[in-house]
Structures are given as C-alpha cells and as structure tokens.
Length: 344
Ligand code: ISE
Image: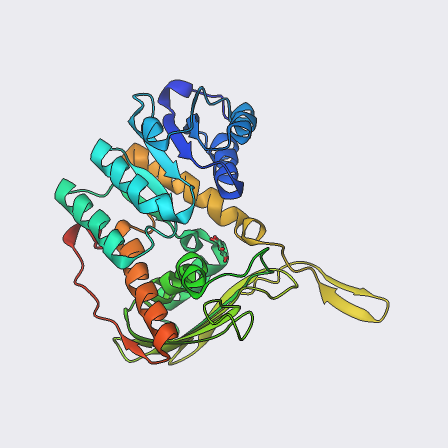
C-alpha cells in the first residue's frame, strides 16, 4: 500500500539508525502506516543513509541523532540505533517533549532505565513506548486472550523458547540477556500478568575458556503469586529462528506454534520450513506495532510496552546477569508502579 494520501494529516517521524532493524521500521512506516510520514533519518553511515532516504523520501538527513531530535519538522522519533545509545537518545526525546518509540532494550542497566521513568513521571504523561513487539504478535495475543478469559484458571507455569540461528561473533552473557532474553523476560510478565520475584540463571558458554560468553541461557523464574517459569534462549541453534511460549493453568494450557509453514513430504522425508530470523517471524508484529504507535500519537492514548515495562525488564535483566555471574538464585525487589503506567 502506498503512503501518499493526505500528507498534511500524517505524523512526521524521524528514525535514528537505519541498519537492518531501522530500515525495516522505515519500510513499515512508509508502506504500511497511512498516517505516518518518515521525514528525517539519522545514521553514521552516510551511504546507507542516502540509500534508505531514497526508499522513503525523507528530506532531512543527519549524522548527529540529536540534531534530528531537535529538528522542528520532526514530531515523533523512532530509535533503532545500537543498544548502548538507547537511554541517552530517549532522554533527549523526553527533554524535547517528543514522543518516542525506542527499540528494546530501553537501556543497558536498570539504573539508566529508572532515570528515564523518573523523567517521564516528572512530565506527568507517557511519551515513551518500548519496542517489545511480541505484544503485537497474533499468536502471542491469542494465547494472552485465552489466559485473560480465565478459561485456563490461574496460570501456574510459563515456558518461553527463543531460538536464534546464530551470529557472526560470540555474544557475552550481558549482551544475550539485555539484547535477546529481554524479550522473554517481558513476555514472562506480560503474559502471566504477574511479577517475577526470583531468577536463577545457568548457561553454556561458546567455549570453556570464555566464561564471559553465552551460547545457551536457561532462566528459571519464580512469580510473586507462586507460579514458576523457564526461559530457554539459544543464540546458536544453527538451523533457523523460533520463538514460542506455553502457559499452563489450573484447568488447561495454551501455547503458540511458530511452525506455521506447509508440511512437505518428499523423498522419504516429512518437514517444515523454519523461519530465518525475527524480521520474518515477527513481520506482522512489527507492522502492527508501528500502526498502534502512530495511532497512539494521533489519539494521545498511549499503547504497548511503556518505559515502566522497559525498566522492569532491565531490573530482571540485571538480576539475571548477577545470577549468571554468581551461579546463585537472585531475588528481585519489584518497585511499586508509578500511576501513569497502570494499564487499564
Ligand atoms: C534481536 O535484537 C531482537 O530483538 C530479536 O527479536 C531477538 O530474537 C534477537 O535475539 C535479538 O538479537
């Protein structure tokens, strides 16, 4: 669907970071969200910036992301820069009073994320949405609806499986937890409707002489209400990408099934195509997230994962990192929620 209709009513958006994820957001905002217009882009790679600009017609191109944030034509900002820049850029958007959709993680530590929450609370209204996009995945939503209907009774257990095909370089424990498992930590809270109060992490490093790296991480969870959970985050499966959740309740269970492709029988084999990466698996979720965010900019009614959710996922991530380092379970002191973040 082309996006040229009624430009005057479109929300003018600036996108920071136009690598793989940022380019996908630019594509979605340009072709899938009628009410959005990408007017500005920022990236340190000038050639890439020019290339992506030709795909969306953005007029304002910056190497300095802060110049984009402060440009008067930019009404709202999407941050898809590398993780270490997320907190500083989000703070700058808040100071400029501009709504922002920040890719996960909101920050690299809970202390950094808390400063964002405090700044937003001081402003008195939500301006920040965090790109924890599984909330928009149709399969996750179906399971969530079933849980919320009460049909399964009280949820007793959460199980999350997060399989990554592999990466070019070994990833550290910190990176796996803050960049990848952060999604699962959020799903674990959101789907169960309860807070995690204890985590216990074990992991397999890429090599025994590199204990700072993590190839496969297992996180055990204990919930405030007594439920338990487990997250398996595999960074190097070698065969493709899968994300699924299963919730077991008192009277039933519900799970997603990411293997939706055709079952093919051929030469004495029966098989299914496994997706390549998150851009394939969550194609619809990213589009729905962009639509919901832009709608929320128009209506003023915030949606999706908030700065609070981004903050609590970092509180859990900090606890997971501490547990991985110590080899011991770690208790989590869940802070009490600020009023502006209560979901209705
Ligand atoms: C990546 O940054 C994502 O956000 C993906 O959803 C996740 O599956 C992957 O592990 C991360 O590296």
